[in-house]
Image (tube, rainbow, N blue to C red):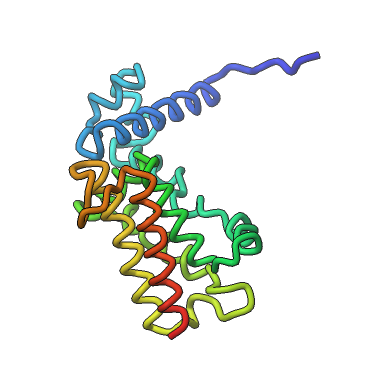
Length: 208
């Protein structure tokens, strides 16, 4: 016999909170952080704006709760990276960089979050930066070698430049320009050229 779903204030409140958080995600993807206004969120969720204060205390707390719930950087699956390492021979750091390059192209939400991170001071956004640091520090340069925290400063600075370049190239392509330095970043051929450059630079830095 199917279990009866119990309705009640607690369950209804959780559903309301989830719908409000879903509304934040929809707005973030389409309009960016500037669209996250109390009236807009309540309209997209289909609720009276008073429910935002009832469920979360404030609009800022709702937004912060949504960002915390997403775990953007922890979605880099270390087990998958290790599996890809075994299959491809690339280092986990190289696989993570390529994953970021390809993933950011389609993840509109993360695109908006990165723009937001460099546009506004907010503790939850700072925490995202720290979360990213933990993810990359946990990656090994190869299965048999030292972890990221023990790598040379040269390797870490190269990785920082590569990651920043990956972000910038994807964001420019999405918002303003198709080509960068003559390379069409919306074409398969152009993106493959960038991927090769990422691997070449990472490999060079790793051997130093």
